[in-house]
Structures are given as C-alpha cells and as structure tokens.
Length: 391
Image (cartoon, rainbow, N blue to C red):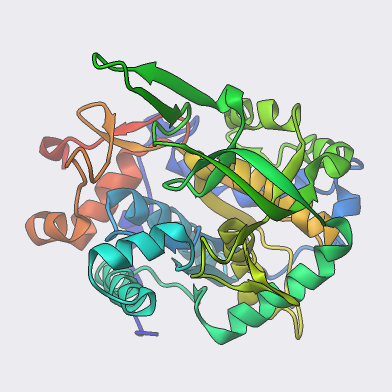
C-alpha cells in the first residue's frame, strides 16, 4: 500500500446547514450507533460489549465491470473522512475496501474486451487503486475476491452456513446487471410500438431475464424474527432508508445462493459440488470477514460501520446479517447509507453516457477541491446533483 500524508482537516469538515443528514452529522454516527446496538433488543447479536479503541468501517468492494466513477469516489471519501475524524481523537482506524471480481457481468465484460476474466479484473482494479491514491483514500485493507485468502474464507463460510441450505429449483427473474434475483412484484413490463415486451428491474431499470435452474437455496425467512430485532436498534442510518428495507423484511423467502457453473463459470465453486458456483453476493459480502482475518482468526469484529449506497442496502441490511446469523457470527454495528449523485437528474449510466470521471475533474479542480465539494454538498438522505459550476 502507498504511504499517504495526513489530509488537511478543512477537507474533512462541512458546513453547518447540512447537519440533519449531512457530513457533520455523519461523522458522529458510529459513536451514536455504538450506544444503540447495546440495547436489550440488539446486544445479544454482538459478543462483546466493550467499546473498542479501534474504529473500523468499510466501503463495498466495487464491481469491476467498468472503470470507477464519481459515486465510487464519494463512498470511499465518506469512509476515509470518518476514519480521519476518529484518528483526531486518538483512535486507531481500519478502513476496508477493494474490488468484487466474480460473476456473469465480469465474464461478459471480459469477452467484450477480448480478455480473460482475470486479465480484465487486473486492469480495472488497478484503476481503483490509482483513484484511491490520487485522492488519498487511506485504506488499511484492500480485498480482491480473486485472491486466494479470500477464496479460502468464502469456502469456509459456505461450509458454516451449509447446514441451513438445500438444493432446489429456482424459476424467476434475474437481473445480471445488478446480480440479483427478483420476484414478479419487483419487475416492470413494458411494450414498445412494435409490440415487443421488455422486462426491467423496478428499482434499477436494468433488463431482466427469466432463468430456471437447480441451485442451492438459503431460507431467509428462518431469520425473520432475529432480523427484526436487530433492526429495532436503528442499525441503518439515516433511518429514512428503512423504507427500502421493510418491504423485503415483510416478504422473506428462499434465496438462491448459487448458480450453475455451466452458466457462471467465473467464480468460486461450491465445496464438493463443482457443478455450482457460489452466488456473487455471498462471495462479495464475505470480504468483510476476510479483512478481519477470517477464518484463521476474527480480530476486532464486528465492524463499526458498513458505508454503502442505497442501491445495495438490501444486500447489507438483509442478506448479510442473515448469513452471519446462520454462521453464528456477530452482526455489524451499523450501516451508513447514502444517496446517489445524479447528472441532469438522471442516475449515471454507461449506456446513457453521463458517467462522471473523477480523475478528469481532479485535473481541473485538484484532489483537495473535489474532496471538499463532495463532502460539503453530499447529503446522505438526498440525491446530489453533479453540477460542475458548483465546484
């Protein structure tokens, strides 16, 4: 890891009018949440009640199907500035980030670039590392899901939760862009002028396809009561984002956690069943344990805060705690959720051509300038507008 200098305090702070869901409020969230998770409804899920001297948080590991954009940088900045704030009070910090390198999207992206999946992953993860160096994101752990130590962690974790899994047939919608399974109520069907019907995710607008295959299934519904009790401790902040979680909590079923290797070969095989590949979200979520030494040891877990965008909240607020419960491991202390940066009131998309490259903005406004703008203007509970004139 590149050694980076201390960052000026002025680029950690923000203005007072953002107090409700802005960055000044965010900086204090982990401390507030520590007290919340130790109430009678939630403390049973954490094996230690002592306040740690280590402050730990994470970004998601970023999917390498394309180069990083301004939204990826914003998530990393939130995590980085939170750690710097804690360092000012004398705490040691741990910041986990990295890249998610398995799945069908990676297979397809590599094919389009005439590269092997590993070559493609190597080229894109380098861009993330260059971005973090350019903006002085001082991570302590950088996890790649193609690394051997992570593969070992995932295999061990699968074996831990396997007593809860069973093999069955899944037939339904799958959104390859989002790497997620969807029910009929979670898709939108539309007919064009030619009479062709398209099906997209109601949440992301990405295309969906029907798949029918034999997979390993995980009974999310078995953990419904425990998930409700965990969420009663206001684990998700801002709490307004629970409106994205509650509909899923109310309709938990069986989740497919593997894919046939004949369809998704780029991934970690299911132990003792090479016909199946572990679902990419199981693989990705375990990265947080990998960073804490799992499976050989698990020091300083649970993590204080997962910092995620609202589009992947359900994976962290429902799937991840359910998997941890099945593995008899402590749950995260908090999930800090943020909104999106929009361009002309639209979400950034390669297909639309409105993706903002942070490296090009750095060349015009400096890394310090862009850090300050994103932390000052970003509000956790509200989408931000990427208007260059404001920088």
